[in-house]
Length: 329
Image: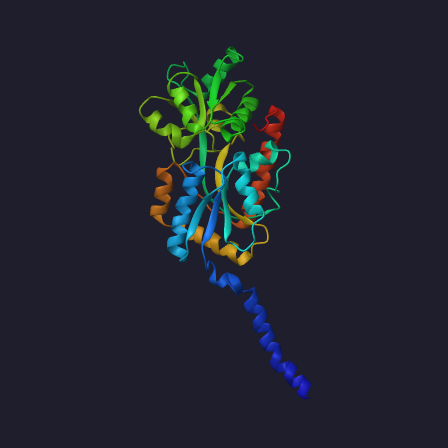
């Protein structure tokens, strides 16, 4: 009787303890973050991903009570920073802010020092923005169909500038070429700034770059924006058609997305806490407006959905990269 009574007393306690352990936020994650969190960026300070990392790091610092500090580890098209995070302790104190390049690198590099899928635990997407196709006003085209027609009339006679070999601006145009049945010559530059300057100066007639780089020039007539590369028109610039709409190419999309990742094995409670904080922040009108002013659309998704999306992007761009024979430089 004594033994049975002891079991009867302990059973509810054990059940309560188990339930507490399964509660989100229980255990070490309940006090997360308890110290400074590093947010790795695989690119130099001053770029778009760096700016996004600093924006969210500041917001996290203000709301979560601990410092979130951006750590730039530039090199190898973002792979140095990604490799560092992949090997970091999975405790939530070393994170990676990266972008579409994470999916492109999976096909661009033969021997990555990490697995772009299995070595990371997605937290959330934080923002998206389309690229765009624009032309110098001297080029006699006012629409994407007219550009396609001119390219067909002058095979290999029209060039476009991009931010560099293997960038989304390059790979996205390869997809456009293949779907439109044309071949534009690629002129790679070292970044979006130099490529935009080249087209503004009339050195190259066509530009493939981020929407934010073109909008100011399009508004004053220095560049003619033909289409954005999102699947549909973007609320960031709804007056411009998508490539799919303008050129009658259903299914075309080349979207720049930014995600926050943690090392694989990071406690789900930590992942969910950060995901929930991103969702809370994006409900704040000022946050959405701040991002929109930089041509970014606030976007958040569940960790599982982000994982599936990254996998699908790797598969999609692998086909384009292989077909075009693009290799990392």
